[in-house]
Length: 395
Ligand SMILES: *Cc1c(COP(=O)(O)O)cnc(C)c1O
Image 1 (cartoon, rainbow, N blue to C red):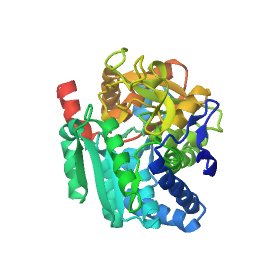
Image 2 (cartoon, helix red, strand yellow):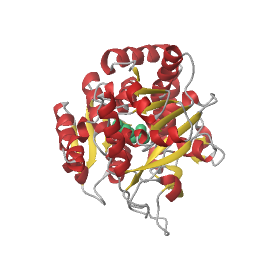
Image 3 (cartoon, rainbow, N blue to C red):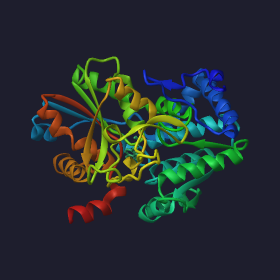
Image 4 (spheres, rainbow, N blue to C red):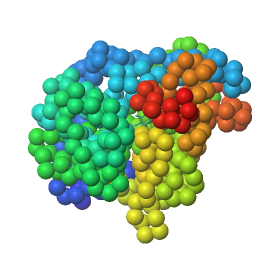
């Protein structure tokens, strides 16, 4: 009924993924948000404000780093890394968090609600709120709070309130539920900054729009440095925001696009977060997409060494690109990711986030398939994962 009132496309691909499966109480705030987003995107002053903050606060453009020693080791002619690990707060999440915080301020909202799993999106949101003078409340599962304690401290230092969520598995899925509920109760004053290309319309479109700066910069940089395009572009995929951000600007190019999911520690339901092979169409957190579920349609538990990829649904736009044959999905196990991280550390002196290490782990496979020039999205830095690296690698 309400969907016809939306002006931006609410659905993706031939399978009509996405949509707006939201409770009645959220329909008006979602319509208002879409309207504000369209206005902002049509307003040159929003773009210049965003560009200035991306430069001065986030540190954009991020470099495109050639990785010749790693390329040689793998038998690739060229390997380029798009360095989102070098952004302020250490991952691509800040691109979206900052842009949505600017949008919220334009909408006259003084409060921000956010959810977080690993804590990267919570830290990015808390930093953006401190920068813009907005009040920030972050919902986080109790299990995640325990295993990501340094990020909880970072958020609190930035002045955010971190609200523990006890329900269910005590992880990201429950935190999103709680954040959506809180938003429904305070939507007159608060904006909800969702952390990936997920949720009800207009969130997936908005988050992807704010992340395409990654691929737009990378495409221009690779053309300048290499005077040609690579033959493969690869990124890791949790909800899909860094993946879409990198891959969408290359959709018109004749090259291969890859997204890498978390293969966890096994192939049975509950042992991984690989939604392409294990998932079926379902609805979670407001959108229709590929979802890991049991035979009764209950959302399945997931497992991954990287908290950022540990989510049961693939974002609807990325899932649609995959189903329509424009992006190929691969998977890397926990052990593969650790090997991927070591490869980059030893060859180039760069410590990747465990999430990004899933993409790195597939580089030997791409070389084996005959690709010679690869662009890889390094979504974040690995400082947050140091204790996992220490225990698993035995340092
Ligand atoms: C959150 C996160 C991811 C996964 O999220 P997407 O929305 O799929 O990009 C990947 N890498 C890092 C470093 C993250 O923090």
